Image (tube, rainbow, N blue to C red; front, side):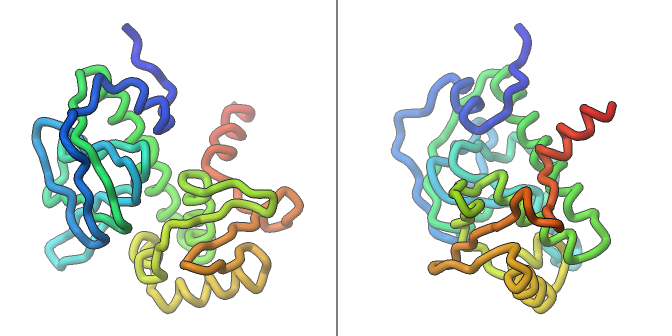
Length: 216
């Protein structure tokens, strides 16, 4: 039987065999999700990141995952490996059949490749702006004015993920706000105001892929 090529969180949720009947595990920001070798964790709410670190202790973010995604040690061969909560998180254990695991792995590869392609940009402004655009596509809530991000990401964390300093991240975010590309909202929310009429509009990964197909 062919594996489905639709890799949205909702479609992945529909392909899983079943969720254990055990209670959800609730974790606080900064806590690590327990690593299990025989099942994944299905994220009911909240935001986590998968990460590793080198011998100097520098952290490397492998991916960002939210409600509807599945995470776990089964999906990575990297050592060391950790799943860190970036917000209050609720997860449930998730057993998977072989085909279902393949679909989840394809989804992980897709989002990790997109993230790594973003941080490969040499110029810090372009890198951070594309990262924000990617977050908007992945986790944003669409409104008439743009996309609202309600992830609570700190400047330090955004800097860490994109490979720039916290001072640079803060300076660039202030510049983006002055240029009308974003608006700060209460409770660490952010309104991304990229729109078709903006001369410096950032091309999202989804639109970039579509353009590539047309030009092929």
